[in-house]
Image (cartoon, rainbow, N blue to C red):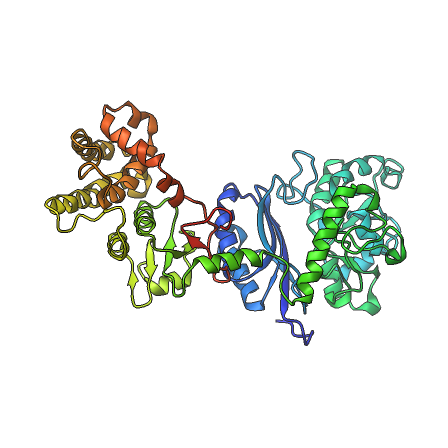
Length: 543
């Protein structure tokens, strides 16, 4: 690990890989949760064609994310470039789904199919110094403005998607004596020139080269005395630019257009801190400028008070006020019927908890320490941990039972427990095999649908005689069973609706339309170790 910057504590890792990711959408949530759990910030783009990212954080945390990605066989050879900074390069973590990880806008161009020849940084000088090589900077005009390779062509484009039109019109790329020239292309990290060389090959250029690892790798490996690079390299984070050794450069960013400030920009009458620069002043309305002025004002107030303006501290203060000291901590998963029944009982009791919504594919360490079996729900109290949904229901209602959900001490208490036992044992077994037959190596789950229907017929018969399972009011028994019936019904709603269980359907419909259902099904962001507390039940304007 590099330690050349004595005061640098933030590691920035830039990486990309063109690889076919057919299930890229499913990767977003667990990847975001893992990054947030390690307090890593930045931007990761996922598309069918691959991954593209720059992230930053403590070195151990960034390397943990890289190990997480490389554990996937498709990304096992993922390469990255490192640099260090003394200030956080990013303020948030985002994982976005895209059509392309770098937008060229030309169908059929794929570096996974064909690409130009890679040239290592130490061999780059010899190539671009050859008189028969046309050197092309594939970056945007504002990037080229602050630095480029000596003798490189500037296409003067505002976005990468404009490069194909330039290629078709550039006189420097025209064939001479019936032969197209050799072309060397480069960009910041290598990703844009991979696509651009694929484009050139598609246009019939036979000898196309690109700088392996991009400008950043060149600046990292080639000593200044041997360098053909002139100026600084623009980077898309708070460092703005870097020079040789990837040390942060002197440039500042316009907070409006997010481009480096032109030379002498601050002396221009069109420059206003946080609002505009000479490059973008004419591109925003007065309404937009006023909004930027207010944002800048709030940033300056936050800075003067030594608080972080990124985020909403007032919101967190409200959440803290809603949560009593030593509030129980609830690990939950929104769609899990066991967790749903626990949340229903907590809501009915009026007990407020700190909600920690989890991703099943990335269970937090704190939850596993509290309950090694790793299933939800888990309720962490001051003196003990409750890891069974029925135990959580019982505990919550023993604290307070304003709606009289409990049946203890009543004549039908034994029957109440028998209904729940039937649900949790045989019915749940059949539900799992009906909904997820592949998990159990079944051709389909139809046989288990019929077995599960036996229990539903029993419920319907009971509800024919009363509005709820234990009489004329909703009790803990209804709350314990309804989430499982809901899951069964939603597996094939057309089939369920075609059954003659009119009483059961009314009971389930009333449950799904209730205000209690809406509250317990509120969507929370996946929790991570550095997250600030959120309350359950949620207050809409806060959570």
